[in-house]
Image (cartoon, rainbow, N blue to C red):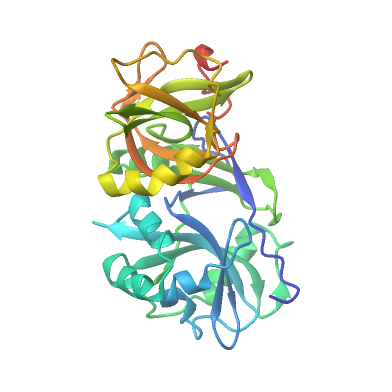
Length: 321
């Protein structure tokens, strides 16, 4: 990858949308963050952990003529269903490893690369440029007739955009300062993500067994004092999902609960504790009065970090402390 720095800039969580001069606002695409580097032979895809995913998405890797060699862009890989990103579907692509399975995935779950920034242009490092200049360069050189690529649109008002995406059931918005430089590998207040809190990432701290088989995941969020239990979830998981999870859950088992709060027993179901290495992406209706997820549905899984499995500033209820 030569001398290209392929670490993404990250937004910080923000409690509410706003309107302010000098800022632009974008829809937050619910997918897998990916940087793309163009060479004369292929497009290299690098995820936020610096791992190559080029082989995983051949339909993007083959778009060699879309941009000149030495160009790097930033965006989200998504799978669309009825025009809306479906996170659980992009996870199905992420899980494909064998060449035959990847080829089938291209047909079953075709991806779109939603591009929102440009870092290098024909080998020139433009990350120090203001966002609006980088985006102008991206827009001026956008390839025609490439259906797998989508240029993410800017909007002038954050509050109106936030309301609109909420009505459509999208994840949220990202607010960006127009004069912001691209800071690789860092979170910055120049980029702020505002989510509709009906979807979040929860640490998996255990599971229940019924008749010797896993029946529900025990979920938590990190507060100031540790991992707080916020409920259990089984909806959304099929038998094949449990089979895929079983090896991980057994390998991660521990004797003591990782939660600082009490996990209530449920009938004759046995509880098994696990190290909270895994996060579950959860969709839910609302918070109950006692701070539990109401009607949670498991959408998928991802590696866990405390930052990912906590609520943003200003949205932390007393029971999470």
